[in-house]
Length: 423
Image 1 (cartoon, helix red, strand yellow):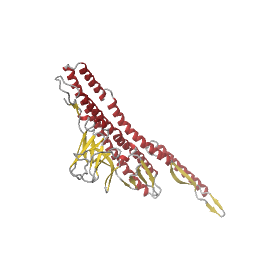
Image 2: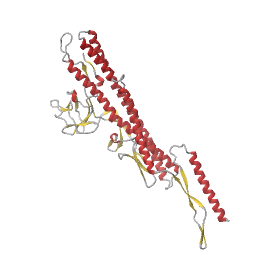
Image 3: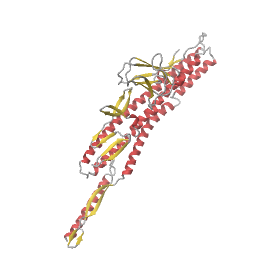
Image 4: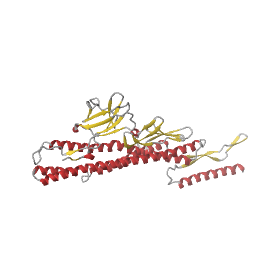
């Protein structure tokens, strides 16, 4: 009877554990990150009597989390891709509305301006027509300046979002590191809720940045960005830093603070919400601002050339109708030399819609594409008598540069903001 009662009791206890687990699954049906659990039962060790063995009932072997590691990894990858697309789309739609609206973009202002030009052409002696042309020219310049300012506001919001995303990432990685420590100290049998919480943190982290996860022997996980930068190692989290760009103080860059200094990771962030923000800033917004300046420069140069061929009411040859701002030059905050750089546009038709980084290697100046880091071919040595020439601009250096000094050269940075009527 004792064997029969014991076997029956073990079955009741096993069923109780199974029901307890089932009720727990039902209670947590809406809990973020919860993974359904199952009780695994095995036969209890049998008892031996003489040459025969008799069953001793059932026992609970483990409580198993029902999840697929491959699907979990694929879900994290899809989450990172969705986060990047969401961030990119959010700002791309706003940029499209800003530049694509025919009533708000430069299209309407350009149409009114050239209508006024046509009016002067039909009746050159009309003072009213000439005055209207001046007014439309001023309105066109104001519209370019307004659009450039709105793009600047969008860039400022991007930086704020980047800073918020970095803060969110650091909070999440700290949570993962804390759970790693608790799981590693559990002796190889961690409570399922700890694994669930860590899995949810990993999902939240993937929303912000594209990650790879490597399980460790002690039950913890190591977390890296796709470029290989460690974010979590065991119970330690390595925070990201959003710091001002030394070449462009109003722009944030993302990286880590290492013993040897700041390590920039901005160009290596490929996914997640943060990756989408950085990609939109680098690949779309910077290009849009430069192209707006390129349009303003082309308009001013082309119209000025034609305007100089005409005469005013007194028969005096015309001069420049429009004036624009010149290139922007920013020295790096880390420069040790006393060199100063000046830049000028000498061939508007050849100016490309991109920014440059000018570097001194100790003996010569080299010009790089800011976005791709590719070397840009130049002529000249960089002196006032023999300036560097590349893609429609001239660059001259004065003072004593030191090896490693850098300058950001932005040919179109001030063109749209400073387009104005010059007569």
